[in-house]
Length: 278
Ligand code: ADP
Ligand code: MG
Image 1 (tube, rainbow, N blue to C red):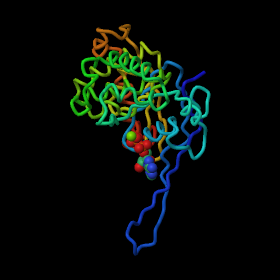
Image 2: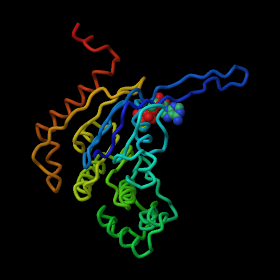
Image 3: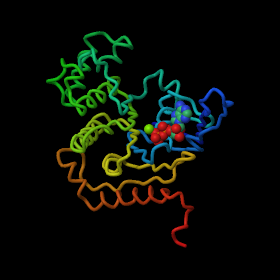
């Protein structure tokens, strides 16, 4: 069974223009996604990359059942997206950590468990285990505004993992962080993923981030939003762990970075395929 199966999905948004009252209201449509199909295997890490407006967030929202496709089908672990949401088959971490400022780190991580009626002692034990997993044990009783941005994102990841999801949906979770914090969290995410075995769908603008994290990098282009390439990442034989950063300096890493960059640049001028050759 696959973690995610997106089949022939199109998403069209109605956009109303002509804000001014005197003008008649005109309406047009945006094809945010056009006939998109993608399968993510159980335990697989897939990165989505592409310029702004190519439909990455829309695709994530459809997988998470935060919106519905205009046509086509989305399945999560074989279930319709709606049922997967009700069964809490996935955890979500987006660019804004979305932490509640009045709750401590521990209480934020406990929140989904509390909402779903887990007993207090179980909640606490699970939250403490996750807070340790993301390296924040000393900060369990602090509030979000006492933490750095990177630490807040780690809390958000811990919270996303609270209910043992087999799938994590992450939309630019490290987008607002400085490069050093970002690289550290990427390493941590790989470690966490190795420990939990969860599949991950991860949106990013960063080519090195996509290549460092993912098994496959899905390249998208806008107007209409489409998948234009899928690059299988060459893995150097260095696993997650303290030496994981060495991967960034291997030839295999550079080859994959180049492959993704070429896949992206092929669309940038919106030139038809083969135009450069002429
Ligand atoms: P990305 O995350 O890749 O930057 P999005 O999925 O956010 O792209 O958006 C894809 C396209 O769909 C954009 O043109 C965007 O303006 C449009 N869009 C997204 N959400 C809506 C919405 N709720 N209403 C109208 N247009 C939308
Ligand atoms: Mg987006």
